[in-house]
Length: 424
Ligand SMILES: [Zn+2]
Image 1 (cartoon, rainbow, N blue to C red):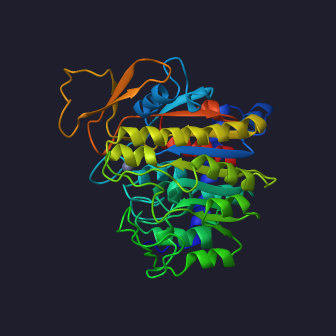
Image 2: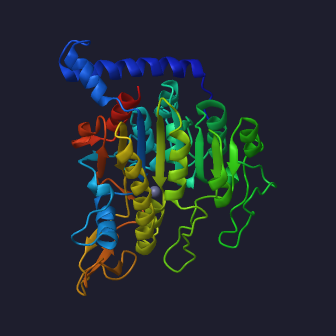
């Protein structure tokens, strides 16, 4: 855990915004204040930003999703955005260069490469300015929606700073007391209650007896209510929730059980990602100055770790439904920048014909499938090469003000520049 004086963070944020604005001016190659420079600035600014992470999603995960959900002649929702590019994802960990979700999301949120496990801190553990704070200081509502713990690495990096991604109760505390996102929806209730207080979801459930409340920051759900959040632990209470601040926790940990096929793998969430996304949009869109909303489907990564192709595809389906909700919003609000990316690849996945002679047909990296191709009598096979992350670059798709800058291949830190420019 890092002790960080917020004043220093604020100062650094001011400097960072200055750098971004200067950069915008130099790209326009005209004096700041000229019509061209100001129109570039206007074109890059978005009233609102929706950023969607398919955790662990690279080109092969998207292609498997396309074959399964859209078919050979079809396109995914996310593939229909007009702008696309690629992001490299390598981290600056002292011991490995393939990123984890913490360093990957920190690159998006801060524009700096850091070590695996870092939540928006630099290599020395110093906190860095984060997008969640930038958006709030710009007067916008902010929110996060995920099928992981709400305090898992990706949302954490946008809304907190800590040296260790495992400090999820500290991350929850920072949400409430420092970054103050207006909407917090997802899993991870265990980190919001102290041991002995089960909360809405019982400790030691049959699906995973290791799950139990374990927070060390007191009863943070009670604190959230004191701070004005409406608390929703069920789908019905989420639907009924009113007000401008909303906390919904719908599982002890992730909103699924990530295991290999037939070994207790479960994905039947209390509230689907698309429903959470829709509710979050209905709340944050009330802000007249716009919003920043982070949406994440965690199952793509977690089931790829397990080489569980069927549940990875189901996670892609959940993500696609959330993307559809976001696209519907953007169609009515074209001043919204929508970006969809993955933070890294997971599983070393390839998508293949079903072949009896493939060299990796048996053993730990056995092929997974066959899976039907929608609208076709053909099938495809998923072949995994690892249960870990890989360095494969990830596609990024976008629409809205500033989106076209994502064309081409960029480091993942470039996403930060786009977000900061859009929100600043
Ligand atoms: Zn992972």
